[in-house]
Length: 288
Picture (cartoon, one colour):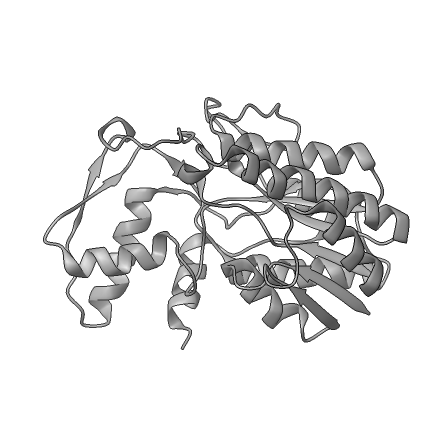
């Protein structure tokens, strides 16, 4: 089986390379090989490689910067996924694409299901929603996996930033009124491998949109406190983060207060369930 993975150096792509490389012949295209903002280049590469499955882990993920980079964000997050879906349908192969909790506005008091109407608060969320809609408009065999608060030991993310800041500073303010599920990229990659294996052996569920996050919930402040606990358990100094409201930490992009996603459908239809967010964090931090 030949899998084309789009995205090379991002945190999710790096974990996918480790996971998918064990079960298939993997072709990885990063920015140096493929500019997703150039549609014709994308078409040529897909024609040349002719994969059995396409996994799109490439995205414009700089949420605040997207507010001033609308054209680029939509080219990568909306136009490119639509082109990938078109080419996948032409080839008769499945497409796996990753989306985000930021397609919702966070006003719902309970976790969001796949049936809830999206209403993104920021441009990043709007561009990711447009990508979902472009894939759905093409149809065919696709999985759109919405996840949340992704982190890993690589790249730039909340985990790595907190590890540094908690040790550098005597005090640190962290937002406490945004709730979600921190999700390790390694967990997403393993789940993706399981989904592909289910499809390969004929045990796949229905195609469509699914929510895929760690179990449990916390705030950004709770996540930072857990990171501080792990640092201290390793004998390192770490300050105690101070909880603050979102209003005390203004950003160019508005964030939803409720980022919780209900993952029941993925467990029911595909028998996929991620671990609790604390267990996944411990496993991530235990990696060498």
